[in-house]
Length: 162
Image 1: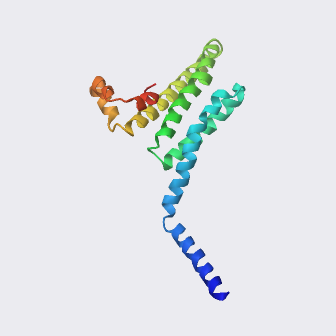
Image 2 (image 1 turned 180 degrees about the horizontal axis):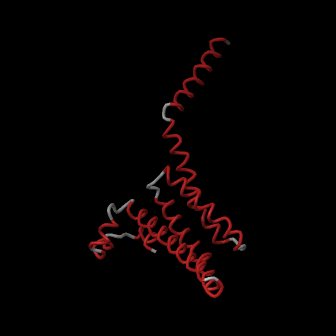
Image 3 (image 1 turned 180 degrees about the vertical axis):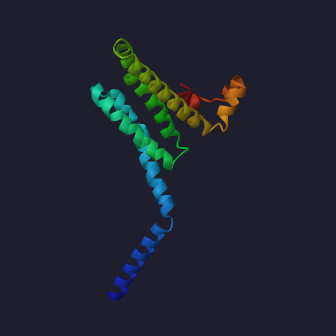
């Protein structure tokens, strides 16, 4: 009985040691699992029937994805979700309010135009980063020779190009 108990304690100790040694890789694996799950789950925003709920929740979701991206800077699904999310947020919730503001408060309308532009640029940058995960230095190549840079695009790149 004592020998079996000592063996169990030893086995538990070995398991704990094995888990403690690659701590960073376990953390990265956990963050990647969450990132995969959340970046695939953003379509629930598109199917919800309460636009106000989406408008209120989307910024929190985008900031959560950005927090995960800080841990996994080359995670293509996260980059894609952020590109789509910032585009959608700006197009669906910021831009539509601008026209109504123009007749009431021109200064506020200009601020919202600037905000919408910043969101679209942020989305573009995330999309380019997503493309650069499989096409390094794409941004530079787009500036010098866009045709040649895009000629190497594959079907898998289409979501990042839209």
